[in-house]
Length: 143
Image (cartoon, rainbow, N blue to C red; front, side):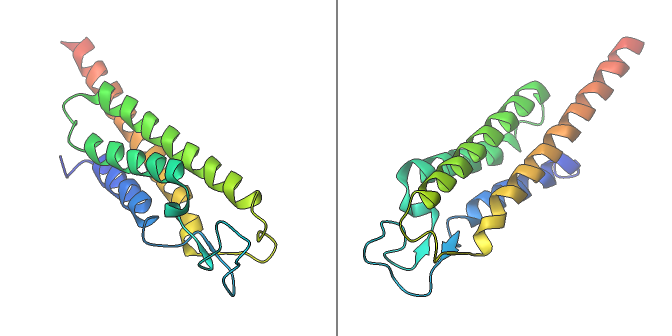
């Protein structure tokens, strides 16, 4: 299980998504009273409950997918679903950010790169799971 490269990529992807819960996505120099997102001077995943749910579901799916190494088709499907929920979270985050009044004074923080990293790692995991599935199918044809 751990010796497969896709396991490492799935672990890194889920870790990147879980890292979003600890790091802010954008910050301002001072708290903005009239802003819903930057009232505490930082925009994080916890500012949007739907966004928080999408990222939590993506992290859970990517983490659970590690243990489904015997069922590669299900593993590929759940990896795609995890990618989808990560994309939904990114879309909601962009919507919340660009519809806020303090978007002009906001600066990107370290956490803004984590969804992109998670999507790259999840895509690489899907690629290697698919590669394993093709290898198993080719060996089955030889039998």
